[in-house]
Image (cartoon, rainbow, N blue to C red):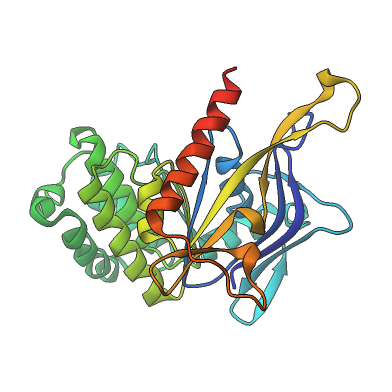
Length: 299
């Protein structure tokens, strides 16, 4: 297991109300987990929380938020109280990121951008090159030599930069890879190819991948688990002006891939055999929910 969370609220320091409630969530090692949901429901928030990008943790006495490192666990509830050096060491040791904006260094060429990560993890340059060049070749195939010919980031297309960010992410030794729309600038063929390489990589490392995406079909094709972040109205106050929406994660909206090429709702686990949901039905189900919630947002 990588993460186990119960009764965790997520709130930004500048905000008045929580934006996300994680009722229960378990993420196991060696798995690809996709988060889906309507716009503004908290998809980026869950990445920021799990990846220690922003302190959004709002705990209560019933909150559990554990990260598992091999045989030990780390209580994450008060992790932001620790020194920045501890947080930096944690991120360096465990986490790797892919952002839709890529965050590449424009003053470095393609290979230098990728070499930076393993070298920061104390791998000598010649060993880092031997490690990353096969990854370049697998991801860029026909463009392999062109990309490695000191090509500047400014000379690369959006799709090439997206794939380069992917190469950089999997070149590191990570426990968890967190990705925000990692295939947003790619066509289906390239997106599908990247996901296949990602799955091979996490299986070989015994790692975990957590992906936020708008691509429902890609999630259903490649995920081991899909977590739909539902939108809930908090109407506790008698004053309608005090009502607010927040994202909600629970077993009721979590689906696990079945060995029978279908999906089962995690809430159904127990003594009774859960019903199998076929992929096409699940895609249409998610589409309808997202469309409905987006429409509600815009009146």
